[in-house]
Amino acid sequence: MKNVCIFYTDENRIKPLADRYPGCERIRLTDIRDRAQFAQKEGRDVIFAAPNDLLQEITAACRGLSFASAAVFPPDNGATPDEPIRIDLRKPRLDYMETEICHICNLNCKGCCDFSNLRVDRGFYDFDRFTRDLLRMKELFWGIGKIRLMGGEPFLNPDAADYAEKCREIFPDCDLRIVSNGLLLPSVDLRTLQRLRDCGCSVDISTYPPTAAKRKEIEEAAKRAGIAVNFSVPMKFFFRTILETPVDDPAPAFRNCVFTHCHMMSDGRLAPCSYAACISRLNRFYGTDFPENDYFDLAEPAADGWRIMEAFSKPHAFCRCCGSGAIPYRWQGHVSPDRAKKEDWLIRDTFISRKAAPAIQKLLKPAVIRLRAAIQKKKTGGG
Ligand code: SF4
Ligand code: SF4
Image (cartoon, rainbow, N blue to C red; front, side, top):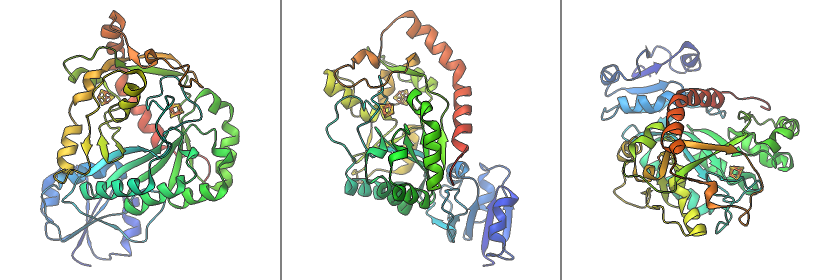
């Protein structure tokens, strides 16, 4: 036990470890990017007692260092483990990943960013495929900061709890969420909600107008099950994001983008964001020819987590198809395939789309990111 060195960020995090490792060395982290402090402890057993959102950077700072063992504790996941979680620092940590466990939706919003309101070929992410893909992700990354199980509407998948439990089993460190429009939550069976709660999965609720009208009912159902729910700010507007005519330079859109962290796993692929992952749905429905190959093939034996992270941190192929400024319009639900138009997603080349919208988005991006971080941290209701 004397060989253990605990790096920690605040006293509250060290408390649960004090009895477990009496007399061990403790180092308070003031600068998580300072590689030298970690390098001095090579060959030791190290434990990182730090918030979830700092672990990616700590991992990067430790890249190439060799410890006898490494672990994280506590992982902030709502399902407190008894033991520190062993990690493999030869691999990076991905900060965020989303995945669709159900491709269809009950709300069919106009211009859905996953194109769920267009006819999609099948309902659910095949569970065996999902499991294989998660295991492959684990080969590439020691952990994932946040996993969001999305749709379409994930509660249309009757086995939603199986998917969440599998994520928790493979990525015990992650902050796990289901992302729902909330409308079905009051009718989800209690056992499913309790299983989600028990594996430390909370529910992020996108507050569309019909959701806002049902908020009390949703909160009561969540409270009965003891599951935490996090309501977004009211969502009264949606945004057109894809350029009718792609440009040559992907950099301006990437610089202004608020979705650069939204990596999506689907059917053996890891894409930089949901637009790149799901664009084939638009192509298939309207005969457009936006590029469909902006992703990493998880089956590729030479795939490497560090290389993927580096690629995701830079402009990539599909960013050429995104506007540097999204164009807002009033949210509208129940726009099923026969009522949808490709113009619901596409930005025409005008002065507003070329100049005004990018300037506004550049101005608002820092505030949007701050607001999102604040909302994501907050947990309300239920457990
Ligand atoms: S609620 Fe709307 S935006 Fe969300 S998945 Fe369903 S259709 Fe898409
Ligand atoms: S393709 Fe690039 S610019 Fe467009 S949403 Fe994805 S990360 Fe952002």
